[in-house]
Image (cartoon, rainbow, N blue to C red; front, side, top):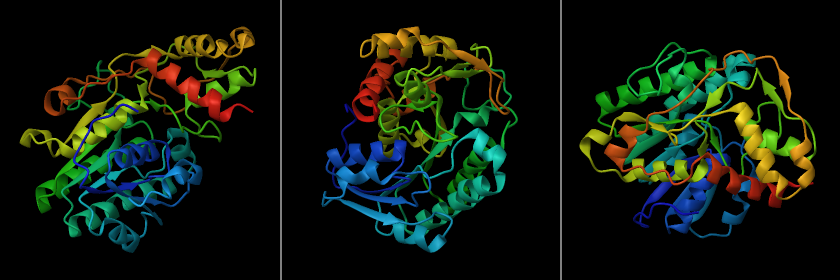
Length: 331
């Protein structure tokens, strides 16, 4: 993992720290010598993601739910920074159960803001979402032009941005929202009904099962490798320009790949390990409700205000991800 270096004296809370993105953030911070507290309810996070950190004296685990304010206040106590990743992701999950998604993503987020305010943390960096762009057809997506949300999940993530803005103006907090664009990489769960497309396709192909594309394969995404996301979180945490704070940023690579091309790339990289994979056929199914047809981010704002410089494009990121999945998840 090649990430930004920062002062090792900081005490940093990572909520959702046992999840895909959160555990990668914990790892990067610990490797830098920081003191890290992980808050996770293990609703979606996995203990095996943080197992290597448990013997590190700079790491501590607090098991709890962000829907409980007391837990949030305990988690924020004596922390310098908060990297808030805890949420219930997935558009389909939010459509199936909007009440729980709202309780975690909105009420839980508000609890964390209140706890961070009371603990006087230096800065609150939180996971926002590209789903906030909703039905906007503007391409590439720029931070100050959004449309109407297309799912309950998208609503919750937009409400997060509104709350963060109000807390910044009302209480003088420093907040930064990071609109993630289709993050992928090591430790991303390939299993379950709400698995992300890349790990799901990888697992199906490794088992010689046909990957199922929702739609005709023309839908496109700005797929973003995990190390780019880690870099952006660290830059958001320590950025010093006054105009860089109390705003939101796209976190992406700035290129889009359609799903048909994605499957082709995965077949190519996986075939280096198992030649039969290149012969697995692709199946096309119905489009999913709430899906945005195309997603492409402008990352100019992140580059100019935070010095963001993503190192992994889709091809180099997929090579890294495929190698990790082949080593760790092949049955």
